[in-house]
Image 1: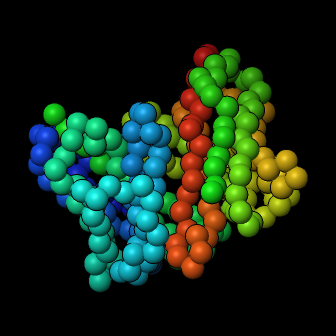
Image 2: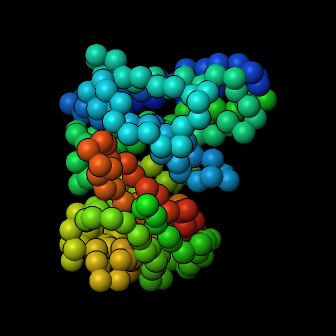
Length: 114
Length: 115
């Protein structure tokens, strides 16, 4: 158990809908990251927050948004869903943003868009 | 930009065989290097890491040495077990300007160990 908690574990929704994925980082971790794992794209970095502020942005679509709240939990909002958004979405956390810091991953949220 | 290249799988071995999964990287500055493992139906787990040249990371019988001269971080294990069957990801982090750091992953290598 990494200490990173993600909900829901599985989600099935229709095209055009909107979903919210939730993440609680490890106790004491200030950085939260979101990654997408799909069969054709592999593991892609989406976005990073540090202590409530956006720190880095990767291949995140405009239809997707995220935020980190004062209690440090984070949410990833996916809207106008398309079939291609079906993937495993990982949340991860680390103590801070230094490159040597270990980044711990949750078990992921499986999203299926039908 | 940063990139990680690892050998394509699947790699199929018999139990107690020697394992090598090659990983090379391209990065600016001085990245930290990681191996993550994903067991079937599970999330990513950190296997080992190295933060500077010539460091050796090790865990559960796996080891990898940070080779700056060859920009490599090959994963090795002397004797694999069926329970090692999983997908292995090589990754690196480096600071992106004054912003955050992020993991850049290789494509993953599936290991299948047969009894």
